[in-house]
Length: 248
Image (cartoon, rainbow, N blue to C red; front, top):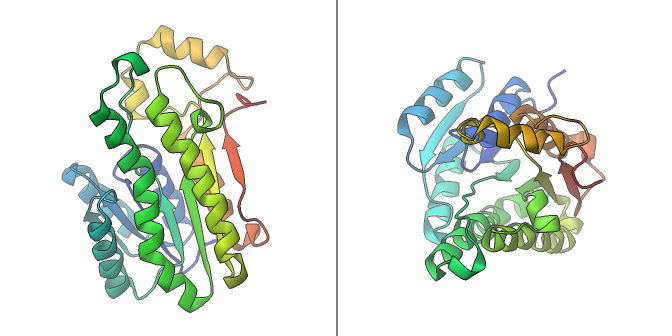
């Protein structure tokens, strides 16, 4: 059974990692996918081709969700191309880790812009469409770090905690129009980025997780699938921790 047959999903930051995993799972479930990427043109074209081969419509857009006007231009282009949008996944994110003592203002501001302001920009850009059709599912990517904090990540933790507060407020504002807004908080997910880490470091992380493994991008994508589909029709304003028990 295809849970998203004929739906149109926007996914920001999808040329690799978790965003790419979400795009793949959504396409397999019949969704048409419009996604953004920042610089990796080759990866974006490869993903576009891979998704289109599944018999759905997919298109990548080079767009910076952290820029208010670019976000609106991107959403307008998607609606012109796809006719509508049903699902918005705010996944674009970066880290610039450092102890607070050594963190520059620029590194704080950049992380807040990409991780938090982009969520405001994209939600604002799509809101009119969702209100008009009286339906829509917004899924915002936070992190276990946004729930419990982490030394060396004050900027990242603040941005991801902000995503949770923003999402709960949106859920309250738009619930009466049948627009839902939920949050996914991934734990240690193994992607291209973590593959570059020292094996001992990764093993240490795995050992500290009750399920004794890192998560896969598919683990996160399946949680997104649930929130995007009608299976979660009566769920809004919630945070789902996809973390193997880290926050238990």
